Image (cartoon, rainbow, N blue to C red; front, side):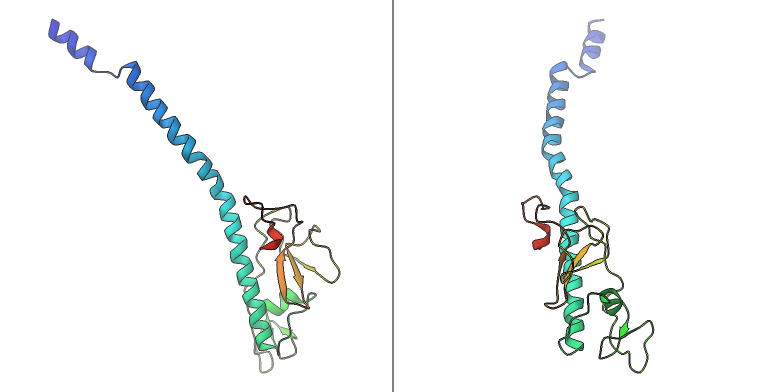
Length: 164
């Protein structure tokens, strides 16, 4: 009979052991949850950096093939996503005169900020950075492109998205 009582007492966890396990799980959660929540913001920041690199490379390649001329702001999307001739005129199909491009498949949507998911181009010569309705802010004179977001919109390190 004494043997049976000892077996029952040893078969479960004590209250102290359960408290220790819960405390360990809480500590792991306190470390892991903030890191995981920053992961989504970090992914969007990385997507912005990647999209800007693709757009900037497409603009530079366009300029290299068009005697240093950058795409026009009004026809920016067509000039980068369709075939062009030496003067920048576009065509959906390649032919004897439209031999350049396309440089990208599509304009990527802005991955961060208030204009998130917008693909349009704001013209630096007529628009103000941060205006709604466009994801990207393009200066055709300089061939520069950046996120179309106000200076106050920044990443976790307080760097403005439009300064990327």
